[in-house]
Image 1 (cartoon, rainbow over the protein chains, first blue to last red):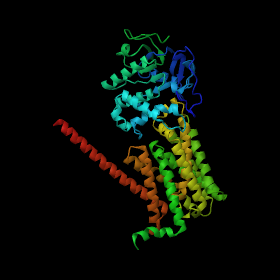
Image 2: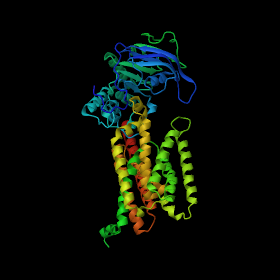
Image 3: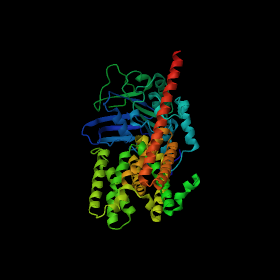
Image 4: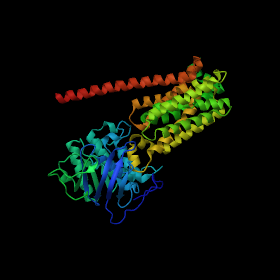
Amino acid sequence: MNHPALPYSHRHHQDPLPGAPALVVERLSVVYPGTKRLALRDVSLTVPVGARVALVGANGAGKSTLLKAVAKLLPIRSGEIRIYGNPPGACHHRVAYLPQRGEIDWRFPVTLRRLVLTGRYVHLGWFKRPSKQDRAITDTVIDQLGLTDLADRQIGQLSGGQQQRGLLARALAQEADLLLLDEPLNAVDAETRAIIVAVLARLGEQGKTVIAATHDLGRLETDFDGALYLANGREVAPPPGAFVGMKVGI
Amino acid sequence: MNIIEWLIEPFRFGFMQTALIAAVLVGLACASIGVYVVLRRMAFIGDALAHTVLPGLVVAYLNQWSLFGGALIAGVLTALGIGWLSRRDAIREDTAIGIMFTGMFAFGILLISTVRSFRDLSHILFGNILGVTTDELVLIAVITLGTLALLVLFHKELELTSFDPIHAEVIGLRANRLRYLLLVLLAFTVVSSIQVVGVVMTSALLITPAAAAALLTQRLSRMFAIAVGIAVLSGIVGLYASYYANVSSGAAIVLTATALFAVAWIVHSLRRARQFETEDEELDAVYE
């Protein structure tokens, strides 16, 4: 892997601790800045390398909060997060985060290709321009997600499902080992759903670790290896008959 | 007098040549940074920065310091102050801007009212492109080239943090630092354009050309090109208008930009109407 000459963050290249799980979360509590309510209380989670884990719960259950804390987008109130044995932010290129669609300004004049290319920026750092190889990787993942014909469209001219695939393409372009996906299957069409599910399966085969938030109880057993159920910021027991799979929580 | 003579005539005068170069340079800088100002919805902050440099200008004027220096210090302080006030969610950014903007402007007006002759400072408020000195021209050139160079160097980061600051944070790129960079560049640009159109109208050079360009294209590179074209053209047309019609040059420049925006708006509306027509025809074809 090419290391950037001038990385955005100087804690860029800590190697994974041998044998460490992809993600360990211990008794994590999170409060949104400027509020008092605990958005996450004492949540613990262990995800082995190569596992695909679903975070399941209603809106406001704490799924996004957990993903954001792992991506170092939110400060931790108490508890601990270890990513391949290191604290969050220690290896930016190894962690990809797929935001909910509403968090991006879709009216901004960039093409889908350019959006996906931003997945390579973590490998470039300051001042370096994308190389031919970066562009080739971008084109490959765009093709994998069935977006080649749309690559030169402005991102606002895409359907919701196409935008979602574009965001996943960017996460893939980053070539990260741990992918944090916030509602990748929320309100997408059948075609997009099939493509995204196939990509998730392939990621599992490649030994990549995937943690995805979802409020959809259907098909969990085919798409994931394990599930953590959340409500009101805490881990809760799975509903009767719901998929459990690999043990990831307490 | 033929058309060529008519075009060349004003530039027999040295001050008109200086004014022309100043207008082109300021147009370049304002329109380029203006694209980010418009796309990041920072129009209010651009206007505010132009107004908040007033006390800096007045203090510098009263002490016979460099007007540029006074304005720059006030502008950069405001840029940092706004960023600092709104860094947490307790005060929203537009509120912070509103407070800084009016407070600083009022302070500037208060200082002006202590000066006997308001006339001396009227060119600060409304611009005096015909009075640009060689020293000022050099400063304007340095600011323009510096701004353009930084916009090019940091283009990929500025672009990313504009439409997806969260991804920037995830890869360790602090979106806030880029915002500070943009605010400081904006302060420099605003100060250089005050000579041309004055405190009150500076935001027109920032916003109007970029807003017109945003109506005409959805490609960022073309948006920069069109915005720069409009700003430079406005500067030149405005100069001719002020020479031949003997009107205020700042106002003429701003009004030319406004007129070009109106043209862009009409082109945009016609295009949309045609787009709907084609879509209707396509739908008809499907139903048949």
